Length: 170
Length: 258
Image (cartoon, rainbow over all chains, first blue to last red):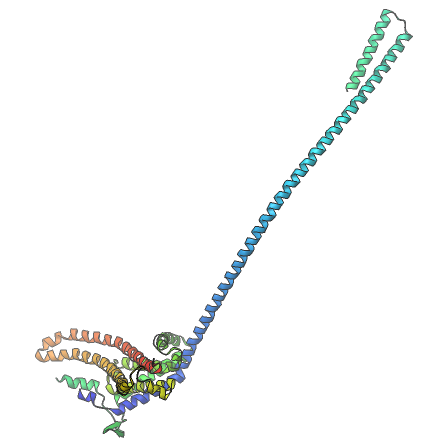
């Protein structure tokens, strides 16, 4: 085993030369491309992560804006709804008042018209009674005034009167 | 049977050729070829081919490999380097990624038959520790400037009288950190091989006493050796991580003295 520890400076020199050459060769041919691909991938991942974070913050900003807009729209719609309810109530009251006024006017007018029609009918009836009375009196004067004639005249008069009433009632 | 000879045969590097280029402190610097250097180069080739293929190809196999390597690379970057270096992590990342994958490949190849345990050799791990020491000095001077780096080797608030003493202690501490890195990796990787071989040698040791007992030891010895082998796979990942993490920690200490 003493041979193992026997100095071998040639081996040490070969080791140093071989290792330093290997450093140069691997630096030129292997580590450059390998580390570049690793760094490219890391840069890509970093860019993707930053993009995702930016998109997320943008989405959060848009969400906050939409929430603010939604709150504004809700407040505005509430105000508008209250105003519409107030306007509707006022319109309903106004229309009701107008309808009541119209109904009262129509009622008064109809009452007046009915009274006028009644008066007119009464006047017509009176005229008819007078005419019939005159007619009856005229017939009475033209014929002899015995009991039989008188009775037949009166019967004829009342018969005409009935027929006149019936005609009037129809 | 000589257990030490078996261990030496499996764990000690044997040069197949010799080429001494210099002598340092009476020790020859022999750059001759050996099975251990072959395994180290195979580990490098495996790392270069698999990592380059995973990084550059668009095939489904490359995607599978990339999905295996990327989490490791991200772990080294996010869990080891960024807490220590902050925004300087990218500058040191290729070094630490290479360090982790080189050690991991060498550790795992050491478990393959006919390959040598590269990181189970103290002179290989010494080379890695020297690289760490060099990186500590480079990072410290680069981030602070030479003067500020030397001044900040000693922690602030120390009385002037004690400053030279603490400076020597801190410099020794710097060497000690790197030596501890070297020994920790070497000892952990060597231990698995030693214990596995020890379990397998028990068969032959008991067979010398009685062939029946030796035969009876086959199943438990092989079972235990396989268990240690499985543990070695885990230790390979763990030691690669520990070496990388501690190197980052020591370099971070030089970059940020406060």
